[in-house]
Amino acid sequence: MVSKEESKQVYIARINWVMDYINNNIDSTIDLSVMANIALFSPYHFHRIFTFITGETPKHFLLRIRLEKVASHLQNNTKDSIQEIAFQYGFTNISSFSRAFKSYFKINAKEFRKLDKAIFIKNGIRYSKNGKLVSKISKNIEEKSDHICYIKQNELVIMNTKIEIKQMPELHLIYCRHVGAFNKIGQAYDKLFKWATPKNLITPTTKTVTVYQDDPSVTDIEKVRQDACITVENDVKVEGEIGKSIIPGGNYAVGHFEIKDNEFEKSWNTMCLWLTESGYQPAGSCSYELYHNNHDEHPEKKFILDICIPIKPL
Image (tube, rainbow, N blue to C red):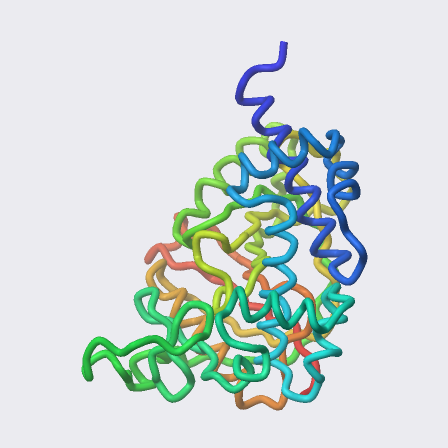
């Protein structure tokens, strides 16, 4: 008989299949029946199960992902029209898109595009390039005092590292998904290694990779999806919470870092500042961290990693 934990893992895996399908087919028509078919449930049961596991109805989740991808694109690309961007992410009617966008972000898309973008993070608080405090979904927020209204850039970005444009290879991955605070992803890695080690999938050439499915400057932190991954060379049969994915090869901005566990914010701030001055913009695929060591074996417990952001010319 299947245990309670095994059953839970299967349900989570099927929900992840749906999320992966949405990410890869965001411009397509996706309704409840399509999602339920992917999850191998009837539409009635899928709706109840998805809502229970994620805290959102399937319809709301799909709409939110589309709106947040539009919002991120709006601030990263000033040349594409709002209508072009909306159509790119699956909206077929500009009027219904406009209503949905304003309902979610409380301002229209044209006004949103003009707002200061959240570029930097310090202690979980987000700031624009000029150090102005902004909200997690890039809306201006009320300053509570003059002391936190602005912060100096050198307090946000202190990493001295070489950032290069590189042609990165396609990565074949197996993953365990984590949703929520960045510093909790270790739990997903524990599950992944516990599953992969007995199957001899951890080899001297295996790399560890954290893949970011959402833009944390737009998506609330409790809903940001991060995949704890390892690279694999051959096709692997997965089960339970363990899934598989492919990160496409292409041009990436790659920054090399050797950092302690409390310096990830600063390393990402360094990358984001470079990007704003580079003549490039983020491309459509996911950003990721590619690790080159086991930090527990480092004499100073440091992570040696590359931060890789897919890019295209402005």
